[in-house]
Length: 263
Image 1 (cartoon, rainbow, N blue to C red):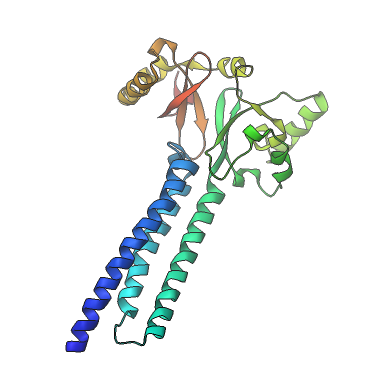
Image 2 (cartoon, helix red, strand yellow):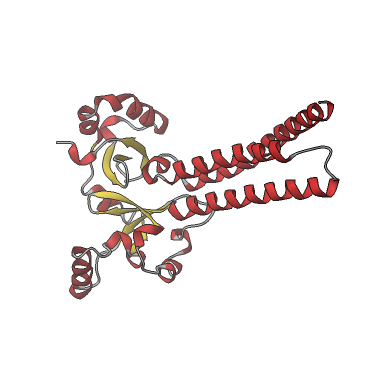
């Protein structure tokens, strides 16, 4: 009974210390995922954040539980170290898998196309290897492991043949312009007229979705932009949001709602 109580106290203490360590490591990983790879609202738009949080939750709980089961202060020191090393290795493997999954699903680009923005992830390129095409982009347009999604525009086809090729492929389920990095161009002042050409007044969106009035007001207040000077374009991905723009086409933020439903 004395040994049992000693083991219980030791195992509980070890599991608690392990839990605190797991929380610290998971917090650092979460900062990378939630603040860099999936800045708001991409965590909602892309969905990968939820899988990562689920994996992290399981990882943080299972590690200390394994320690609670395996830890025994009466074991030889070498055996105890082996047990704990195995537990840590299992946790690190789970953490690596969670980060890999989140990294693969993370949004790489926010692409403007005619009357909308489209969130593009690695999976949106299908089986096509686009690494060379992305590598040929200007450095400011290339995704980086420590940077969030890059906003880009799309250049016009160089000739009728290029236009026809993309059109035919997209009609049969292939890649459209947004899934072709070779068409990406900077989303800058020179490109702004193309983005503004189909942008609509934000006031119409707010009137159609009165529940968003508070979010819209907060966003415009933080940016110092009046309602009459704000525009919107729909954002396409796994959820329906709109990008809020000023009259220079600068993206001020995002608000939930189906922009295409606004009359």
